[in-house]
Amino acid sequence: MRGLFTNQLLSIEPGQTVSGTAPRAQTLRVTRGNVWLTVEGIKHDYWLAAGDSFTAIPGKLIVIEADSASSIDTRRAGARQAVANAGAWIVGLAQRVFGHATVSLKRDRRCNSPC
Image (cartoon, one colour):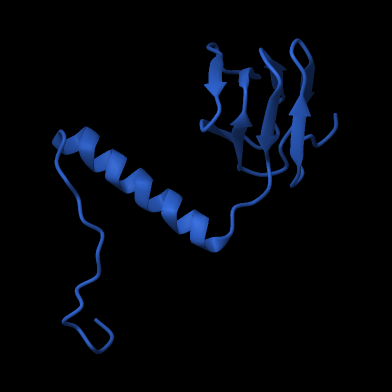
């Protein structure tokens, strides 16, 4: 079985199917189009549109089919993007736990030394 998601951009035409495994937990981000995604061992499937992402499970077969001309970015996000993703995840979690509360992740600027 080939490692499909190896730090690249995938272009998938309508009706085309690609499959493979991820060597590690990895984010697949749809940058254009719509895709259907299924993962070995998970009973439900996923429909992803441009802007959506999915974290691949290492070692599990993943099958992706394009509904329209689509692109998927499997490249590793830089450190800045990883921090932004973590911040968005924390805000989303807080909103689910506390309702629609606003959460601020700003650092206290009054502290001039290591806090």
